[in-house]
Amino acid sequence: MSEFVIFNGIYETLAGLIFYILGLILLLSFLVVVKIKLSQTKTDRVFNNVSEFLENETYFRHGKHKTEKDYQQNLEGKLEVLTERHGYNIKYEAVPKNGKYRVDFVVENLVGIEMKFYQGGHKIEEQLCRQIINYSKYYPKMIGLVLNSTNKNDKDLKKEIEEIMDNLNVIGKKDYRIIVKSIGKSSQKKD
Image 1: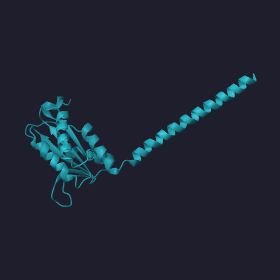
Image 2: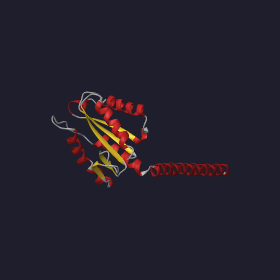
Image 3: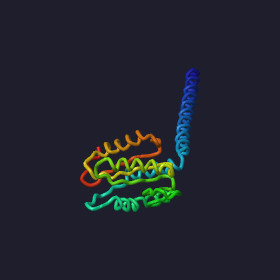
Image 4: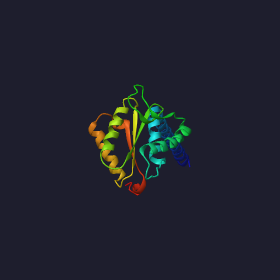
């Protein structure tokens, strides 16, 4: 009987130790997650929130006579959601201090958004890349939002623009994001 009591005592001690170690592992995991979230800068948080919103929550309807300006004005209304959710200050057609350029949107004076209405060709791709580079001097993060009204695959168009940016090698990949959204007839051509 005494052997059973000793074995039972060792078993309980071992089980307690295992639960204690598991508790420590869980606590450490939680602290790592908290540290990662806290280490993310305000700029990164704003950049990620805006990017995720544009990628996942914005949709544009094709209009036969719509211009890029029409889509920008449409986006201006959609961006109000970010102000409601996060209290972001968003400026439309913002001019940096030097007054030389006008970016389509600026969020919290940290993230610039340049929108392009793509109807084919390479002119828009190159223009967008030049603008992202120019505006990156004034805003730490840039988003290029391309509305694709062609049958060109969104992923292919995004890849082409990113390749131009990589070849220019002026700003780091973590400082800009290209988002391509289909509109009109091509809206089924996302993959």
